[in-house]
Amino acid sequence: MENLISHLESLLNTPIIATQKLTGGDTASVFKLETDSKDYVLKLSTNEKASAMFKAEAFGLKSIAQTNTIKTPEVIGHDTFDSSSFLILEFIESRTGASNDFALLGSQLAKLHQHGVAQFGLSQDNFIGSLAQINTQSSNWTDFYVEHRLLYQMNLAVESGKLSHSEIPSIKSLKTVLKPLFEHVKPALLHGDLWSGNYLFSKDGLPYLIDPAVYYGHSEVDIAMSKLFGGFHDAFYEAYHDVHPKTINASARLDIYQLYFLLVHLNLFGSSYYGSVKRILNTYF
Image (tube, rainbow, N blue to C red; front, side, top):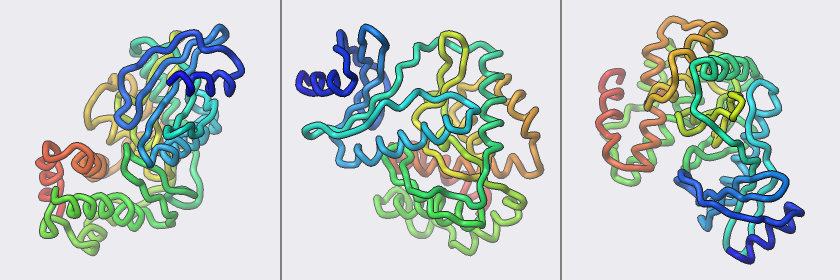
């Protein structure tokens, strides 16, 4: 660690006067780096995928920031040193959010979702947690979501024995059921993994998004993830839906979009998510 600190001091062009290990970080160790001028977050990992993951994270943070709708920590840099990969970000001093802070988060997320392009997906693949997220671009949301979200994760679950072949709907069945639910969907820039651990409020109440898994998809995907584990004030949803009113079949789509995240959790964390996955599969397919 001492050699790495010296390397980072050279990169930052300032002495690091203290380091503090932070909580969180399923895929990396996270530290606060203190200097005389400002503080930074260091994410550090020896995982062979870490370099690609940090590169994708940096791209996602910059993509959101460039919309000028909602803040993300500034990306200082990412690289490898010895056998470790690292990412350095601006450190944001945070506090617990009040209802007006959540309302601002909701309205700013809605504005982020107004940024769209012609196709679903992204110019590059990235990660959801430590799992690959395939972003091959498509003009058809049903095709994209079935092939690159649901089936990709289902096949991973079969390979690891968490699901059986007989439990996976056919591609024809998936598309037949979902096509009428996915009419009139337009590509929107998504955070992609919007649970309560991936936002924070600065000391002055400004919302920040962290740890994104960005791509262009249906705006309701972010809302579905936000409701899967809780942690969002009612004011968030009220402000969001002032900009993006709910549409027909939203409750069914919420289940279908949560299915993707539940499959991810099944693949990452195991059988405790099996029942929730099966409930949605049995309900719709």
